[in-house]
Figure 1 (cartoon, rainbow, N blue to C red):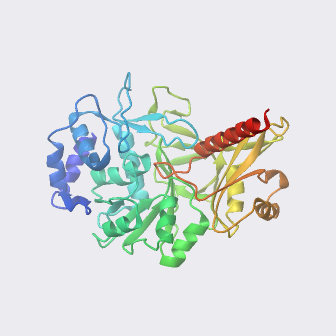
Figure 2: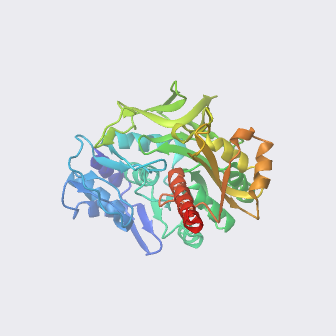
Figure 3: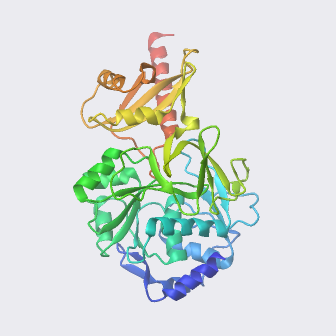
Amino acid sequence: MLYERWRKIASDHRSEIALYDPARGERWTFAQLAAAAEVGGEPGLIAFPQGRTFIFTLLRAWNRGQIVCPLEPGQIPPVFEQLPTGCVHLKTTSATTGEARVVAFTGEQLAADAENIVATIGLRPDWPNLGVISLAHSYGFSNLVLPLVLHGIPLVLADSPLPEAVRRAAASTEAVTLAAVPALWRTWHEARSIPGSVRLAISAGAPLSLELERCVFAGQGLKLHNFYGSSECGGIAYDDSALPRTDAACAGKPLRNVELSIRPDGCLQVRSRAVGQTYWPEPAKNLADGCFQTSDLAEISDGSVYLRGRSGDQIHIAGRKVSPETIERALLLHPGVRECLVFGTPSADAERTEIIVACIAARSMLSSESLKQFLLEKLPAWQIPREWMFVKNLEVNGRGKISRAEWRRNYLTLESVAAKAEDEGTGV
């Protein structure tokens, strides 16, 4: 089904440029890509596209009827004892809140996701996608790869996300669509290197701060459009407004053909033809029958989705709960805070259950005491972090995400090492 759709696209656009790699001076028309897909390929039941040959490996796999499992460059292919019936694609989740999982998709589900995204965002052949984010990750696959092979939206490959590399790649065409993550948008903005040819700017993969959105708009007149999706169901919501948002919790309006509702536990539920088939090899009730039950706490108001944190991330303090995003949004109002991340860790005090920890990347010298006083003007005292960790920056993982789970583990490891050193030093 997917390969037949690709052949139709390749035929309709045969003489047009489909894929361009400016750093290597290589370009392929749709006809040339179609010809390359007819020869070669990986042996076995599964193909693993990765790196610079990603598109070629994908198309050859579709031609040979193989299941596709995208990988990051250098990633070791997983071993599957069995494969799900009827699926053509295996996605690996981002693991921002725990262990990575594999999601199985049919061809119809992948095609539906691409259709929803192209129709909602308005991707255009005359504004080629500039490929900076990972093609293997769900965000890049749905927003860059599928629009190319199923809708004829050309793809320009950037050699790296470094400011100068992005600027050089963007200079190869008069107008581009650029999808990235907030960490990259911040880096490019601070380096004053956002290409002037960007006509459509998309941000996803992590929360987009109002401060960054406003700064880019003020400095360049470029609106960063917030995009919200999940590996399990593809695109969910998109902010199509022309002006910067006024509420950081706003994720935008549901994509076309996507139905959203709020479950009794306050979490968002997604229904669409793009929802994945199942987790593999261990199915779960929250992903089945065209419905994905997220762990994102949300509200729907005036047709827009407002994210209020994750149910699993909520911090429990003496019988009360607080979302870390609530504290993060308050911290980001401080002019000295560039980035922040809040999470809960086990408390030695059984009555408290957890303590609140704040990681801060500051623009200038800050003290925990000054930040506490600042927060007391905005939050109840019980929501003020008790522990503070100041860092140079909040490092992202390979997919451009800031993993709360990883930072929590790092903090607990540091605490354990410090406690051990103190015990050894005092002879305890």
